[in-house]
Amino acid sequence: MVPVIVLLLMLTLIFLSVINWRRTKQADEQLLLVSGTVEARYTRIASQLGGRITELPVEEGMDVKQGQLIVRTDPLDLPMQLEQASRAIETAQANLDLLREGPTREELAAALHRAEAAQSAYENIQQGSRTEDIAAAEAAVAQAQTRLNDARDELGRLELLFKSAVVEERKVVAARAQVSQLEDALSSAKTRVELLRNGPREEEIEQARQQAEAARSDYERLKLGAREQEITAAESSIAGLYAGRDALQVRLDETNVSSPADGEIINLPVNIGDMLQPGQTVAELLLPDSIYIQTFIPEDRLAWISLGSQLEYFTDGVSGSELATVSFISPEAEFTPRNLQTTQKRVEQVYRVKLQPASGSVLRPGLICDVRIPAPEDGDGSDG
Image (tube, rainbow, N blue to C red; front, side, top):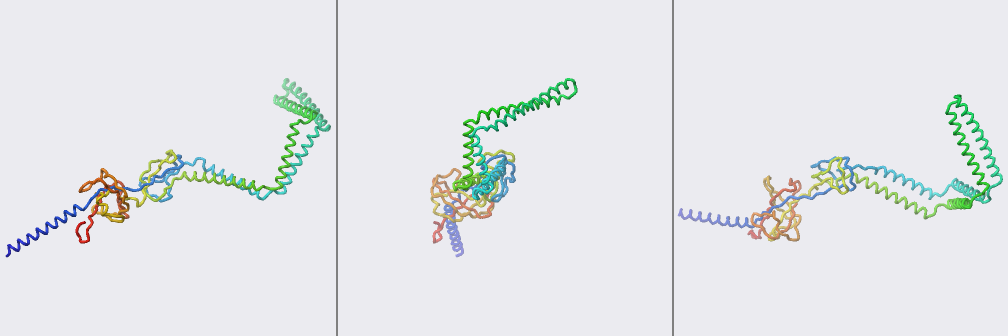
């Protein structure tokens, strides 16, 4: 009986080994291992205004926070323009306040005085030159002639003394200048007499009339106060000045290029002193928690996974596996990429899938990893 029992035990072990081998082979055939690439989302930080770099307080590999300064460029004359715009707003606002308050008594009195003076001048020029004015002008000519004669006599005396080396040359030069000034004064006096004798010209009378009307119109308008249209126009002008100042402030703010989000600087292609062009990239930022694994799943295995499924992945140089969650499945199929490799076979149609690794993963963009797609099981425990 012993040999029979031993034989039965050996047959049983062989049978169980065959069954286990078949199940293992079937599981291996159902199991799929695909290649994936670690990728990430990046943000390119650009200068909107351009200009020469004056500050660069960051380096490649540095972690930055949202709003942190990356690059500062030379503002040139923007601060001065901004100050001038602010002063223009202050002046325009003061004028608007004066329009709203209306004229003061002193302003009205001054405007009335100007209007009366202009009217009086117009009336006088209409009447022509008076006899007493002509006589006064002729007396001024006689007086100017007398002064000129005396100056000429004094100049002649000084010239004789200079030839005798009695006086200095500077006295002679001063006397000649005095004679020249008196000759000009005499010429002006004679011209005034001639104008008074001829009387005012038509264009002078018309000019005086227009000046009188303008002065009277200014007084009447000032007495009525500012019109609603004038106040509205002043308010619109101030609004335009504010808009111009805000535009200058925006341009000044654009000289400071800041980080739009938290992240890690992985590329910094500029240096202090570089001249930036508008729109030029100054840094490339790796966004936090943006690393993902991209792979391609064959069409016949797509039904085995879904959004939220957790798959194992392996990376070179790291022992063991980690889990990643399926976060995206492409709705459309595409042809198999050339770098897609499986341990079993290659297929014609695949679907792009993104996997989100767990927080704190040490994955870096560009790494190659293998993603394991397990075979689903039926309810009775057999492979599906």
